[in-house]
Image: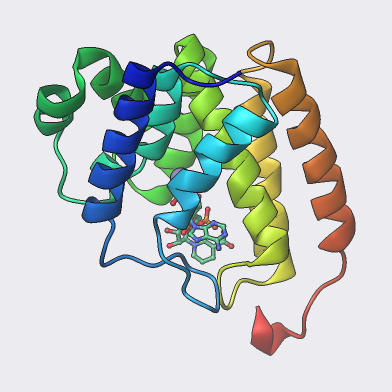
Length: 191
Ligand code: NDP
Ligand code: ZN
């Protein structure tokens, strides 16, 4: 199944906008991958594993880190992409003024009451991040830190269950594999 022309235009516009906003950013992996690879990966996971063809969800996935990680505002997103996409992106945006521990708990709480489209974006984000933790982990992260991240991601995703069974099955299998891969510990000096 392909996207109708208007839907394709929306997704391409989101790609252009996100690529521009993230143009100076890199992921945390040792190779410092271009940041835009991550939002593109979310949309690809949604489409290929989740069978998602809803252009609003795919575009929100592509834009999901623009408010949190760039100078993009909600008003700007609304002006370019409309109120619906702005609302989804805001739902998956952490309040960066809060301390990390508060943000972690807040994500679990917010996942519980999030909209169906925000749940899909959240699930794809955690799939991509857990996959990266195994294949291209943040430089300097100990196995224990990576395990803690997987456990927290599971707690967040437990709150969105029922939104897409193919994505949920994939996430659960990925976490199992990640925990098997991330066994052991490093010497104290490397933690
Ligand atoms: P962070 O929140 O610091 O980093 C995880 C986030 O980084 C992911 O959610 C993802 O967010 C992004 N990311 C970028 N590149 C990668 C990649 N290659 N693989 C996976 N994720 C990537 O991680 P923690 O949850 O561990 O830490 C929270 C806070 O606690 C930090 O701010 C830190 O100051 C502090 N801390 C925690 C320690 C611990 O052991 N947990 C140890 C020391 C400090 P996105 O997709 O949104 O971009
Ligand atoms: Zn993300």
